[in-house]
Amino acid sequence: MASVRRGLRAGLAALALLAGASAQTARAQAAGDSVVGEIRARSAGVVQVLNQWFHLLGAASFERDEVCHLGQVPYQCGLIAQGQLAELAAGARYTCALREFPGDARRYGTCVSDRGEDLAAAWVRSGWAFAHRLHSDALVADEAAARAAKRGLWAGASPPVDAAAPATVSGPAFILDGNTLRIGGVLVRLAGTDAPEGPQSCSAGTGRGSYTCGIFVRGMLSNMSMGKRIFCTIERRAGDDRNFGVCGEADPGGTAMRTDVPTLNEQMLATGWAVADRAYPRPGYLDLQTKANRDNVGLWQGNFLLPEDWRRGYR
Image 1 (cartoon, helix red, strand yellow):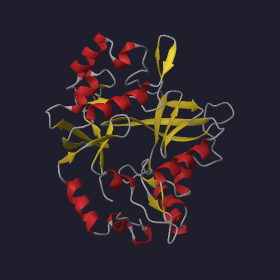
Image 2 (cartoon, one colour; image 1 turned 135 degrees about the horizontal axis):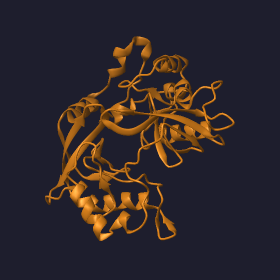
Image 3 (cartoon, one colour; image 1 turned 180 degrees about the vertical axis):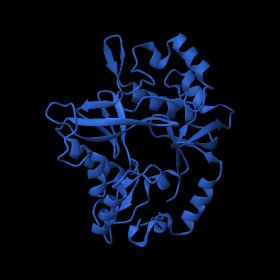
């Protein structure tokens, strides 16, 4: 696997440096507007084709650990939804047209199988996904039909879809990955940071082999928030419907963030287990990353790809 050490000592230009012919192939692949291959379901509407990750345009569902209710009985609707997506995609080869939208750092794809079936539409019609209206309303009618037939998610009481988040949230945090957490049913992405994806591997340093850094960084964020009430100030971006937050340990009353300890955003950057978001920088965050790089801590102990480059297929 081609890898790169993000050496900020040489300046920001070095951030784009990649090594090897395999990286050149991946770069050309990612630069195109389509990708062809089998689909692997990775999370709530995120799929992988070859070595590229993207969201299905027009469809989304709940995270893997989300719980819905059928009558008074809870069940793992997020896990079932991902399984349904995997089942629908199985045994077919897909051509996926890729798109990006202003203000949204995510990539999206419309995937049609060699049998002529649109995967996102089939998923919404199954009732295990809903129409994601941010960039497309093409599947609204499919969602309405699934609702009327009480299929999948609509057979019982589902968590709210597209619910507006409050300006602040406070409470125990459940960690989904290295920069995403849930507090009281609200998903929050740590603003100004990015972290390796779940299956992403990184080098641990000379002679030390590799490790699954995506899982490791999730554990590090879990450890930082363990046993604490977390307070987040929520912000939204034009063109992106996710919640971004600056989060840290709550004060004793749970009504504000403690000011005498670094935020979780800052801690992840300072310990080297996250990198600064280049698209949406925040004051001081790049300085924390630079120091972590210089001190060889966290991810910087070895070689790794920036998460955004990894998602685009560079290996």
